[in-house]
Image (tube, rainbow, N blue to C red):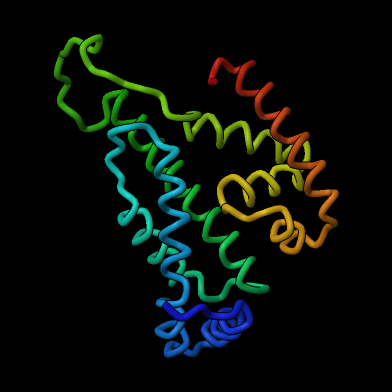
Amino acid sequence: MKEHSPKEVTQLLNAWRGGDQAALNRLIPLIHDELHRLAHIYMVRERVGHTLQTTALLNEAYLRLVDADQVPFQNRTHFFAISANLMRRILVDFARSRGYQKRGGNIVKVECDEGRIPAPNRGADVVALDEALNALAEFDEREAKVVELRFFGGLNEEETAETLGVSLRTVQRDWMLAKAWLLREMRAGGRE
């Protein structure tokens, strides 16, 4: 598979934003693998048996991204950061809707012995993490953005620094402080 330059992706993003639908058709094959990788990272962190699958998450993200053609993407990295945030929102919305259903929603209640159902926890609950991350954003918006870009967006430290327009050292410091803050917040809320 031919490797495409970040500049080419950025040019196509700008053309698409400018109304060129043909640019979107050329862009999708260039970004598909990376978006699929992001969706897979999200889904690996979800609990076993999650009913949303990688492809469904990717498709939902595509639908929302197509509607976001007026977002001023700065470059390829910024596009993927926004995409990662969008996937996070989709999973949080999905988890919240599932929580609604668990509390009665439109479901017929069926009794079962929950002790017989294996439920390994493969990471933090996405809603609890989202709440903790939102609380961090109120305290320090940049640290929350660093977590979002690194953890959810899969960006490395250099890409995160470029996206936020800060130094590499700032990203490293924010990453370290934010992880400690989130861990403390998750433990305090009994959500670890």
